[in-house]
Length: 130
Image (cartoon, rainbow, N blue to C red; front, side, top):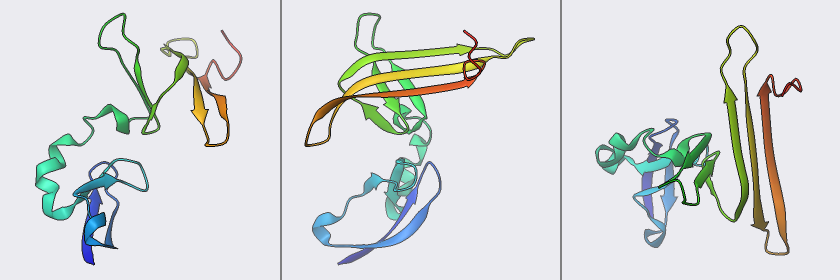
């Protein structure tokens, strides 16, 4: 058994964890925010990565070029088996602005494969404005 102090470079959560030697990892996922949970002995090696990786953002959409399939990260998790991704954002000027996110993807829960849909409507979109 080894005792390791991990700290998340994204949200700052830290704790001591006792692990078997075969279970030890220099970096793992933060249980709070899914960020990089780093062994403090190696923190200097990873600190420069804080907030540089899209997988730790609420929503990140990456395209290699205009014909590629987008890589989508939602709440720290990459979305696979994508069917439809849409994102609308409108600035707030003299009218109410807003954000609309729509994600459709297939998900396998080890029993069935089903289509999962996520929608967020904020601002004018939440009020029904188009």
